[in-house]
Image (cartoon, rainbow, N blue to C red; front, top):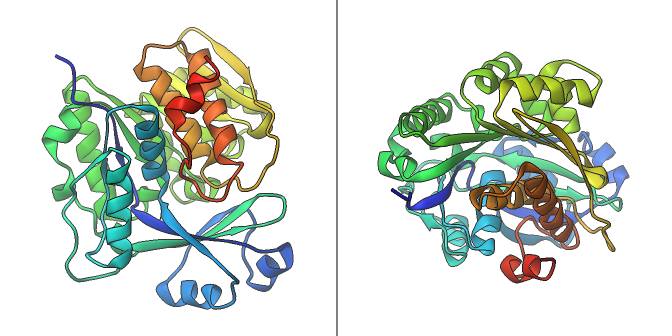
Length: 328
């Protein structure tokens, strides 16, 4: 029987606040360039008050991937926690407007909807300060058995491994997916995230993950090696399918039979790398859901990622179905 959804995403429901800064601003604020830092509401407010003009748009790593998949025509669903507040209503509207199913119960009190300050430097690198807010309230009760059972792939973001209740929710989703014969995909999300949960991630990847997404820094940190090719060989042993993004160089893809490199696409005007990995995963999973080879999956991931870096924000601002149709 055909499942209702191609991909279910489970992750942080966040509204991004994007702005341009220079390296001096990051130094003055004592922020690690290119990283994602978890901050308190007060710390987020302190950084925010020193920013210039900002753009607000829905975000969250797995949610961005689901948005990209929906834009390409995949059947999608998302599970993530928001508050019944203004930012929560913005997030809810945006993801549903793209055609994704989203019916996680909202909070009526407690912490507000999460938000992330995305600070983009002139080289298009992004540094993120994230206040998790309502995200940390995700529990096992929010994992709908029928939704997971009816999703060919359940896609998890590593960022959500921080709160214990959310970790339990992940484990429940993994168990349901595998009991139903479905696949589990994981994004390592961030090298600092791998640092925080290194041994747990090693065990998770070996025992519970069928499809892994990582960038070069993340995968090298996971396998404690300075050689990305060595990391790729270890990934091939651990997971059925793997994808390592290598920036402008493209990506390395693996399955049980092969390890291959897929050349990156030239970007005319690089603006903001926020969401590049998220949209790469969207392109890859869309191709995989349509029975493509891992090389073709990597190529579509590169293509979609090359579009999102040409504008501010991590969500597609064009119809991706039409965009990829132009390239055959």
